[in-house]
Image: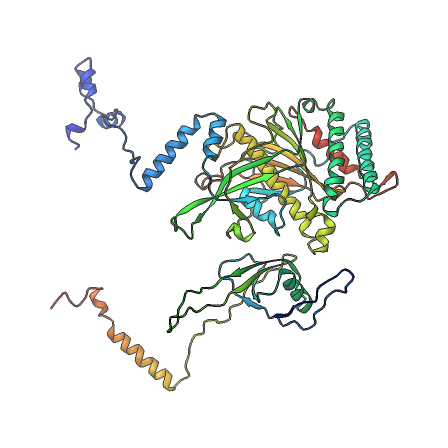
Length: 153
Length: 416
């Protein structure tokens, strides 16, 4: 719901606590290990709980959530900087969200491979052609069948 | 031409007449002659893969000649971390994963024996109806007397009803089905089974990079079960073609989620090996509190109710039939020669689901599974309501189909 805030204590009869503008932000990440098709992986702030994740996704983004599992990833405090002080990489919490009704989610390919084709007559194309010629000159003679120059006259 | 030293010498040694000394078909003689040297085998003590294979093969050969008790002890002696499978699980779509781990194909509906339902005697049906109705009304009266804690409702209300119903029906049908009079009815038995399935590469540790099989253990506590001294007849032949496929899951079990623990590897059907009632008949399960329909729908998981029932049935019945087969001396290298059959009824008080299971193969370990075309089969129904609601002293909408199916399940005879 909100970071760095002490929530009002609940006593019997109090109204439901409602937060209208949470200060949390979720990050959808590509899973490092292969996950089942209905599982989505998020990096969430440490103060969030499973119920917070479920309410966040259902109320703000209207994504039906079947199950949420979380874990905390501890990051190293072993690295040292140039002053020999230990530098901590910050920890983060990961949430695995499973969607209802057999829905699947595949993390999209954000950086697709592009074939670089320069336009005709440009400087880059001439440079590319020159580099290609150089590489061709460096290769050994194909008529020698893989035998190095060491053998022979 | 081969040199004379390759020719066998015994015809010359034991020949009677001079004519026999000259044998034209010397090549045939050479091939059928007894070799002078023992067969070349890989070492037993070297640090090599062929040595390991030879040791394993010899150990399995030696196991084949042991009794069932010794086989079970040898296969479950070494403790290592294993995945513990709970039949009633909160995991989503668990039935596909469990089908993969137990190599089970699931078929909707019941086998041809029960579909279409054979006729049941009307007098027996009416008596059974009385028994079930009195159990339901008794449970209802206790529920009306005072509500218990929410988490204990199933335990306090549904378990006694099922206990009374099962007892009453079993005693009623003992004269129809003689095998029931010889059977043993257990309450809260412990059923467990331990087996090896697919392989995995160890990611970290001193054994990193090596391939080892994954170990699984099922621990189950059904509400009650009936064990009989003879085996139930099979539903389909052992090598029959089954239309459904076993789903294949390439992901690690940790993603289900399944958790690993290390403790005693148990294989138990509910009674020890020497018990004469060593074959299973029917198991009765009560759906736990957490997986009741209303609570699942409050969490938005109404479609998971059927799947979780299916997963529970597959796991429980596989464990029971597998343990029965191990008690008879079958294991992964010695596959079952006859199918093991069991039935289960899962209920939450109002809804009943019926499941039949046939175990065709126990060879699930990586070594035995490479050329194993058999698969286990599970038939299951959707959950059917037994009654619609209960008013004071009366049950509205009692479903006869459920009663008939229940009676047929209990009347399943070993001889016919």
